[in-house]
Length: 177
Image (cartoon, rainbow, N blue to C red; front, side, top):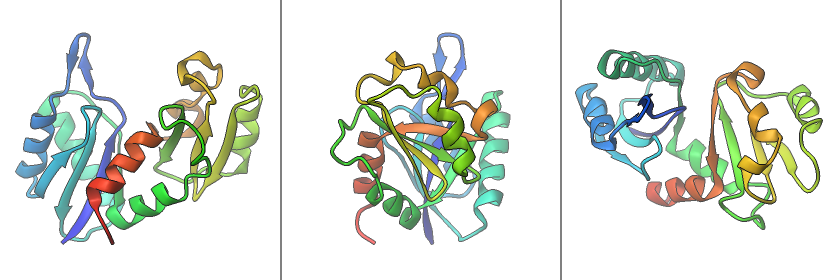
């Protein structure tokens, strides 16, 4: 069995209606995944399953989500090992965990994305692409920067943003290698 981390792009089902994490775990169980568990109520799911291509599992999860909850949602998957590596490669470990974020990407970003985003990132914001994912130290509240509104699927491709506290919390939840 392989342990996976699934990150949902959005857990808002409709105005005023958010996904309940128990329902997300039930969906994973119905798909035959073992030991589903969530981390904070923001669409982070950890589960075990047979080894399969990541894209196949993402498609399966997204189809099940659409069927069960009536809304399409992008779901980004990583193996536990890949997630632990991602957490360990935070280029801004000195930053505030709430103000450092990563846009976890389905397809790796290239340097052209960083060049495009630099126009919206006023100092002291720092950015770096690590293994195709975009790390940002907002150096303050992300919502108070111009950059946040440019970290979209339309501009960057399918991905989802998590803060460093969540990244590290998921890594702790996964335990050792």
